[in-house]
Length: 266
Image (cartoon, rainbow, N blue to C red; front, side, top):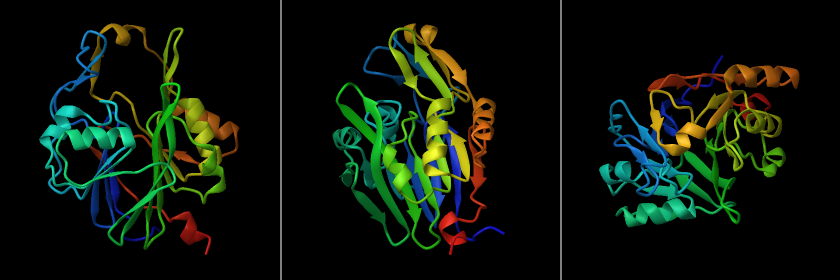
């Protein structure tokens, strides 16, 4: 029997998500319109959508994990209502402010933000970007039902997750992307297994998958992909973990029909 009123999550493709939680709609790392280009270097890598993703009618909060273009996508930010509140990593908050958003909260790891009386958003350390900086991961808790959802798009689960209560749903890459000599761009299988061991989620959902998007350019030719949902399922079974891997198609919605572990333990 599932807990009522938990909501649903929709994968919009790549790292873009819509969380509908306790009547609140949270748009996460949206790339909905235009191409994906880092800086002006389309020759280096360029992501192409076959068609734009419709902007949701209701957006109560924009949640950004990183300041890079595949998380704080410039053209998508241009298209959004600038009065939407934004919660973001320090780097992403700077991008949102430059784009004209008027209510921007930079959330450093260890800080939290309450969306009304319904959702608590906690920032914890996420992926390293360069030699010194780290971006954000987030834990979202539904305050009435105590459902806990974790999101981090590069596969770097922080050690502090092992000291926290378990999460119910974890969103993380399941495919690893590697560049020769430079090493991992995204840690899929290894990061997913570490996350499952530390956070003990009931469900594991993939992010950063290409979906319907195609990539071109110099970097795209050298990216090496490995792992995936079946490989992670095998790793979880070998580690005697009960976490269930659920996969979605772009624009598919998943109802959160599960019993939060915090509720079940009472």
